[in-house]
Length: 103
Image (cartoon, rainbow, N blue to C red):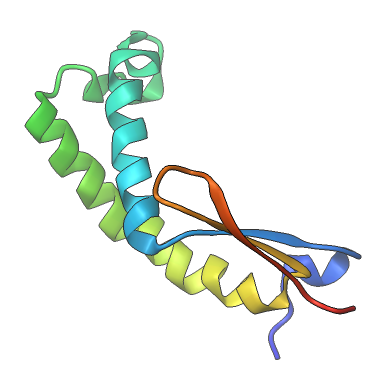
């Protein structure tokens, strides 16, 4: 099996949620940052501050699909079953399920 950074920890916690929830949270956060941190002219992301809401949603969706979603599938999800504790989050961020693996 491939080696993961989590293999070097005595106890690991995985915060899990449906991919559709994570994508929605990412887009919502992107829109919020457009109004706050992105508005700072010194911010690397300042170029997104002037986007319309539709353009910002489209850009966030593109970033999610081309970068963050791929990272989730390729690098993060494979570590889920190695975790000692898995917290399953609901659409509203509540922890709805806790799984503790016997060590």
